[in-house]
Length: 215
Image (cartoon, rainbow, N blue to C red; front, side):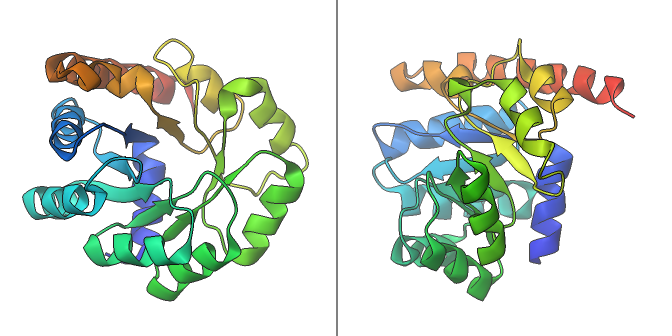
């Protein structure tokens, strides 16, 4: 799938579920629950044991029906391994220029984590495709609006602190998409995958309300 198609897929889905778990089996359970609940863009964090195997397994099971990325990617070496395993986007908690270049080499989305306007511009100049605002809960939805005023062209994806109840606020303040972590996948840590699926369905329903309020 070409990079522009991956970008459009993120824009259309508007939500990226974050899969972070203590074992590969739990990670797969969380991912499958998210997919069953309707969230079909997933980031598998490299803090999860066996991340590459999780990505490979999900790619084999779902093909292009599910958009898969790797998260907590700190360097280009890790990014390349994830890309070869089937990751279509690379998400980092910080800006690493070599990682962004690696993504551009393989034509996958680079989504570095930033917090300041300087970091946003640095990431964009290096070729970043979507800018992850992290940790977004430290400043809230109003910070997205503040950043968008001088940088309206920056595609911002707040991550951290996104819940069903405040989902609409992030988009009302200018978010392109959101990354959703523990408020979605939290119950999966104890093996309650049905609760994860229910939360995914709740997010999907909340997103439909967001879409209905936007032109």
